[in-house]
Image (tube, rainbow, N blue to C red; front, side, top):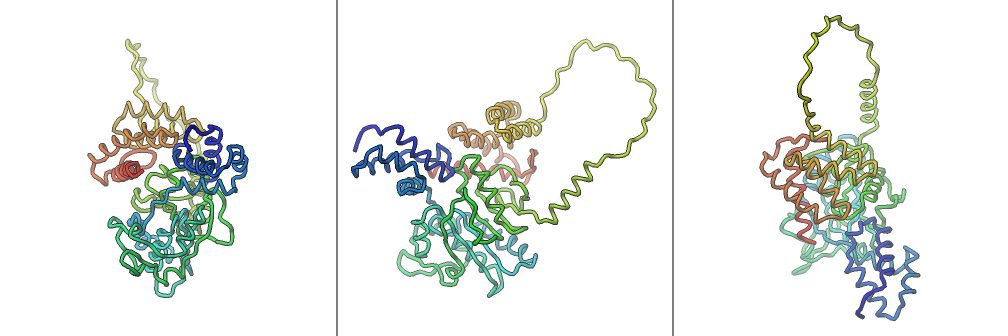
Length: 411
């Protein structure tokens, strides 16, 4: 069927997809939506029928649309640095707290490769017989059905992601099957990251939610992170994708190299200690008696008025962050644009403005900034700390730019 589709139909279809997934408008593939709607019309349905069904986000048509736009790029041990860090640092830290079992959640697991990778990692990182449970969730039931089959082809194995822990066995020339020991500790369930996870699933020590929130609107991303953090045990860990957040989520602290985007939920004891320290800092101090000094000599009137220098980059950056928190993205963009002009080598400003443009749908404006960020970061020693609202090494900015630009090349 050729010709132009009813714009109302396409608009409503995108609205339904955005409401269900939290995706930004520009992250919803227009060609996928167009293809689904044309297919439905080719079956003899009318635009009125489709508009009526789209009044219900739980309808079959809405499910088909969501499936069509989902990004299913996943494979075993993707981003191996996360799994190495889990095994060497995060798991021992949780065991040291006296945990009697380890529980992990792969949120937005697609066809399950990440879930099984997490299960294999945790299982190999604890003494034999120590209880381990891993949950994989996704919004799309068909993906979960594929995950439960636990049989994968060559697309799920990549040279860029080595086989770090015992995970599968060869069952054919181009096919592998997940080991029974890994399958036994792994379950799958349908869930939406924009809704609270049902209480029956309990809490977790480790959550992987990587390369999912990239497509979310800022509001949906923040809501999802809040919901994820609420399911963590005190001291639990959240692992996000490289460019999904540009600051530490509330109630958490960054752990490990910044480019890992690994965050740990503060324990009640740590929160109390921080609150006590803040209270001591805010407590009024006893007045100090003034020191009597002779009056200074009267200075001659200045002939020229000195021009105040521009505020330091970090202060301008904080001003922009305050405006973002207030929902004034236009004002924040204006501040950041001025900051980048005045201090083009201030890496946090380049990253902040690029991410702001990406979130507002102006990817064409974000890409040059990310390229400039990568070029400037490459000139610095990788471990050199860069001043900003949070002091981070230069390698964090280079890794963030690389992840963003490489992601664009794959799309």
